[in-house]
Amino acid sequence: KFRNPKYLSILNHLRFYLPEMYPKLHRILFLDDDIVVQKDLTGLWKIDMDGKVNGAVETCFGSFHRYAQYMNFSHPLIKQKFNPKACAWAYGMNFFDLDAWRREKCTEEYHYWQNLNENRTLWKLGTLPPGLITFYSTTKPLDKSWHVLGLGYNPSISMDEIRNAAVVHFNGNMKPWLDIAMNQFKPLWSKYVDFDLEFVQACNFGV
Image (cartoon, rainbow, N blue to C red; front, side, top):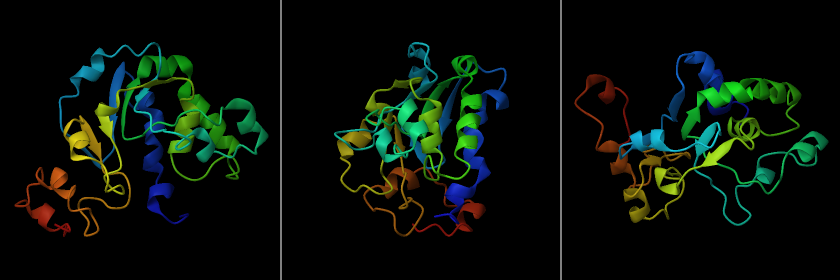
């Protein structure tokens, strides 16, 4: 895991600097590179963010995907600041109010906690735990139809749920361009790929 580029790449952490990268923008839509957009997303700009920074689909159900699973609540700093039962949310399609981000000083909050976690005792590797920390109490839940996850690991997602989704996310290891992709989901991605392009052919996709 420590050698996995997914966890080592500095580019993964650029998402915490969006207001600095786009100083003239007020709002921005963040999309991961394993996303397929199926419907018009302009409706996101009509959502009242209620002063929140991050619009995201929540991922918790029952006792799953709550803050306790992503952070070390035996550490006093984590235990004091966060609710272990707080609902986690998904990275991949996030609607950010950059004005609220600047007002709440979220990038500074990110730096503060990253420095505290220098010895990795507060949370594991990855960008979701620091995201959950940075946007704690500043996240607005979006309707689940905006963002359907798990196409890279969960074969039981219904096709009705996928058809109704504005965005589908191939998070997980079974990416649609790999041989290990799930056949029922692969066409959701491959139908948009122009396989006549020379550089696409050179990629040797598992299709």
